[in-house]
Length: 68
Image 1 (cartoon, rainbow, N blue to C red):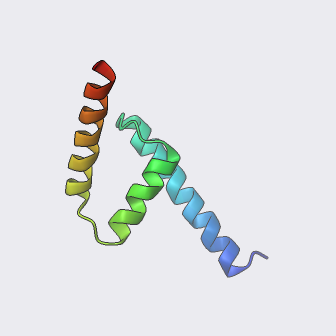
Image 2: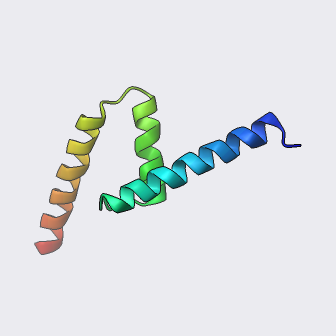
C-alpha cells in the first residue's frame, strides 16, 4: 500500500504530465521545467494572463536579440 505522500507525488506527476500534453497540443513551446515554474507562479497568485504576456514579450525580445 502506498503512503499518502507517495500517492500525492504520483497525483502531482500525473497532473503535470497532463498539463505538459495540453501545452504541447496548444504549441506553447514550454518544456516541463518552464511549465512547472508557470504552474507554481499561478499557485502563488500570479495572474495567468499577465504571465502569458510576460512570456510572449520575453520571447519577442529574445528573438530580436538573436536577429541582431
